[in-house]
Image (cartoon, rainbow, N blue to C red; front, side):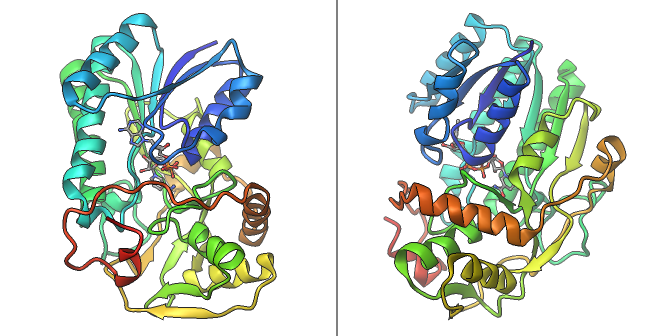
Length: 342
Ligand SMILES: NC(=O)c1ccc[n+]([C@@H]2O[C@H](COP(=O)([O-])OP(=O)(O)OC[C@H]3O[C@@H](n4cnc5c(N)ncnc54)[C@H](O)[C@@H]3O)[C@@H](O)[C@H]2O)c1
C-alpha cells in the first residue's frame, strides 16, 4: 500500500485518479483549493474509504502561509509520491488573468517541488499539450520543442522545466503528462469559459440555447476519455523521468461534437456563430511513446462518452457558475464571456 498526496483531488481528473488509487488499496491525502473542484466529486469516496482517504482544503491565501501549510503536511506524513493536478486550468481565459495563473499555478507548484525534494518524494505532474503552442505541424511529439503561446501553456512549461531542473540538481524522480481535451462524468459543467463539452451540454439542457461556436467550428481536437487518462497517470509500467503525451487518438471537429450533444440531449442542432478567437485550429498529439509501455487501448466511441456525460448532467443538475478569477485585462476578451466575469 502506497501513500499519495494528490493535489486537485476534488477536480474532474483528480476525482478519477483518487478513485483508482483508493480502489487499488492505496492511501490518499487530497489537497484542493475547491475553486474549480467540488465536494460532490469526492463525497462518495470519503464515505467509502474512511481509513485511507483524507480530503483537505487549502485555506492559505498568502505565499508564506501556504509554505507553512505544505511544510506541515509533509512533516506530518510520509508520502511515496505526489500527484500534482491542482491548477486553474482555463487556457482560453489565461491571457486575461496572467498574474493569477502564474501565482496559482507556478508559485504553488514550486512549493510542492521544494517539499518533494526535501522529503524524497516522487512527483507526477499534469502538464498539457498547451505547452506545444499553435501553428506548428501536428501531431505533437514529446521530442518537439515546446513553444507555448499563452500564460496557461507557459506556466505548464515553466513547471515542467523546473521539475526537470530539480531532477538534475536534487535527483527528483518525476513523470510529466501532457493531456488534452479530457471528457467524462464528473467534469465541471459550470464553467462558461472552459471545457467545450460542458458548455454545449449546459446550453442544450439548461439554457435551451444554440451551441456557441467560435469561427467555423472546424477546430479539430482529440477528445480523451477521462477514466483512461487517470489510469495512465498512475500506470506503474511507465518509466520515471520522462514526458508523455496522454489522451485519445481520434480527432473530431468541435462542430461534430456539438451534433453529438444535440443527439444525446434530444435537442435541435442549432448554432450561434461567434467571431474566431485565438486558438489552435488543429491540436493533435502523438501517443506512440505511452503506447510503447502500456500498449494500445480500445477507446470508447465519442458518441457513447457524450451520452454518458449528458446523462450524468441530467442527474446532477447543478448549474451554478463557479467563482472565476477577477479579470486583469479586459482588452481582447471574447464578448460572449464578459457577462460571466468581474
Ligand atoms: N481537463 C483537460 O482537458 C486537461 C487537459 C490538459 C491538462 N489538464 C490539467 O490536468 C489537471 C486537472 O484538470 P481538470 O480538468 O481536472 O481541472 P479541474 O479544474 O476540474 O481540477 C483542477 C483542481 O485543482 C484545484 N486547484 C486549483 N488551483 C489549485 C492549487 N493552487 N492548489 C491545489 N488545488 C488547486 C481546483 O480547485 C480543481 O479542483 C490540471 O492541472 C489541468 O491543467 C487538464
